[in-house]
Amino acid sequence: MALDITSIRFGAHPDKQRAVIDLSAPTKFRAFVLQSPDRIVVDLDAFNWRPSTILRGEGVAINDVRYGSLGSGKGRLVFETAGSVVIQSAFFLPKGEDLPDRLVIDFKIVSGDVPAHIEHQLMGDMTSSAPQNGFDAAAETLSGVRLPPRKNVTTAQASHTTKGIAIAPPAEKPLIIIDAGHGGQDPGARGANGAYEKTIVLAVAHELRKQLEDSGKYKVKMTRETDVFIPLRGRVNFARKHNGDLFISLHADSIQNSQVTGASVYTLSDKASDKETQKLADRENKSDLIAGVDLSTQEDDVADILIDLAARDTMNQSKFLANTVVSSLQNNGIRTLSTAHRSAGFAVLKAMDIPSILVEMGYLTNRSEVERLSSPQHRRKIAATLKSSIDTYFQKTSK
Ligand SMILES: [Zn+2]
Image 1 (tube, rainbow, N blue to C red):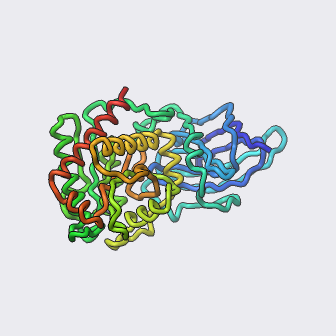
Image 2: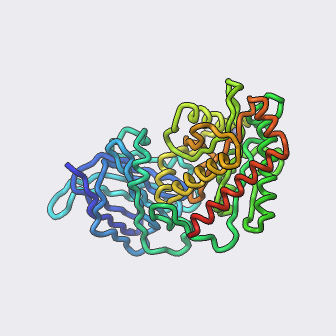
Image 3: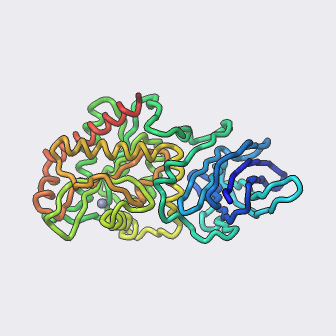
């Protein structure tokens, strides 16, 4: 029997707030909370979105309602909350009298940050913790339902819920966040000539900043300007804190086969586009481990982030930028891999609201490629290519 969501009601009570989701049939479900932004996530059987009403009572701390498909017969509701939230209870009520089957979620807004692991509450009896596949399909079917704005809603950019590439032109100069990968105790890949990835990417980052600033069209911030270590999450937070318009992470890869050369560009996905990209993401995500950062407190639900990204159109913008960079590299005679735009769960690409790409500029394990990448001339060429891609991106997306 098809599951419909027929209405959602939010009410505030002295001791709690309550969400009631009216359904056309029973469902298994689980509810949990996530942060950045604070939200309640409800996974249930795949559903049709047919609410006749979304009612928000006085004093309810819900900013936004989103929904989407997770594939594999599952669907997801996301309630964005105004502040950290804990779920007090979540239960299913079977239909009776005049009331339909429904899910009830009681929650409370708490001040301050609540560690993600303490606040997780699993209810119902859905077993899988994250969608394993079908994510592209999920991205296509995601939609946002925007409630009337509340005071102090900080996610001003979150209103891009339409499909396609459509972002408002930034009011002032766009802010480009350049992220030179690795640094400090994490050298990244080691080149055939002994050069370190961290050094090469920092040089390109400085060159790119110079070209962007010289154009007079952009503001630029770098996650690191010197040889220092920054955790992956710190890079993402940096981009969000400064409210960047684009995030570009610069890397150079290594591979066993020293014949392999070519640049490639990556966007975030919960399922790697291919085995090599999965291994690459594993290598890049190891940066924190190498530097001894404790990862145990990091929430790592790429799927949930992708739902948010898709709802905000950031995903499409990231893919558009990635494809623009690939063709720009190819048009400028810079060798790329044959499939040059790929995707996987890169930790550094998880800045919600900010279109983000990771560029692998080539393979340091190939002697002539590492020598090219070590030359200022070639670095200028790569930076110029990235700059022209950024120009194209803002021309296309601002129309
Ligand atoms: Zn790297």
